[in-house]
Image (cartoon, rainbow, N blue to C red; front, side, top):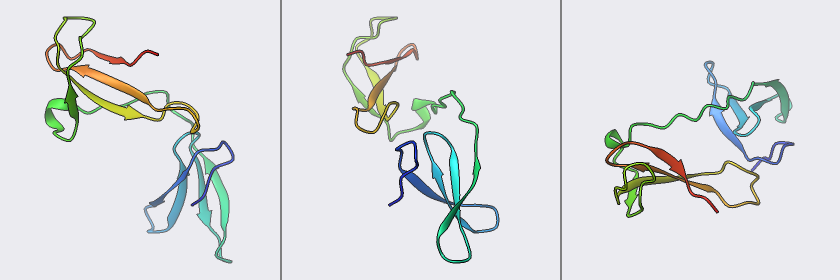
Length: 108
């Protein structure tokens, strides 16, 4: 297990040549294996602030729950969780209304 200097977990991924890279999901830094078997920092990708969420009606893996939609007052929504803050803080729960499609996050 490798951690980035920003504190996030580095995830393995193969590049177009089949080489294994470690990529930080938080800051986008990539680390590749060097000839000695260790890893060296090769680049840093600009972080995008856009979160892409698939259409929940086409993704049966999303769970649903009973919660009131702030837009249409429907009582059914899909939900999922994402780690949007530091790793030592709890993940954020997102909801998407089954009726109107409004997406919102759980407020604390």
